[in-house]
Length: 225
Image (cartoon, one colour):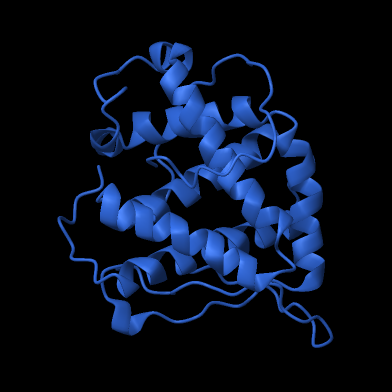
């Protein structure tokens, strides 16, 4: 999404071959996962479990990540981030191909239809790096809940007030991210890793929609396709 938290902690990696878009993934809905264990304190906290992000009174904090799950995410992310630009571009292409209405927020490439043209776009690549660096900022600070809250509050408020992006797109993007990671890193994306990453996406979504609620977001439409 638009200028996703312009935090750039590292430089991104070279290009890879373009993937073919898959059928649209299911939007992320409050995940359920095995208990983290009574002796594992949380790293950061959760997400609403309701389907409608525009009903803030129903928002519930999701199950937080345990220390073990934080470590799982950080370990797998280290491998993902080695190809940050490639993975980010793949995520955005899948996102825009399967959910073309999301392109309305990007004047630089909103008229692009061809995935190969998207892959060549320097503007799309720059935004892919911003997305990946924003995720990196969260992952690196999973053991610092206050920092995670601060980073995601900035992201949410910027997208609500400046870019006017409907919050449902964050839910959809979360599903696309999980799909790409599972495809590209399947050998290490075990059920345990999948659970940890699903919970992380829930953390991002919960905090971002909380920022939308804080600034008094008003729903613009209900269409995401």
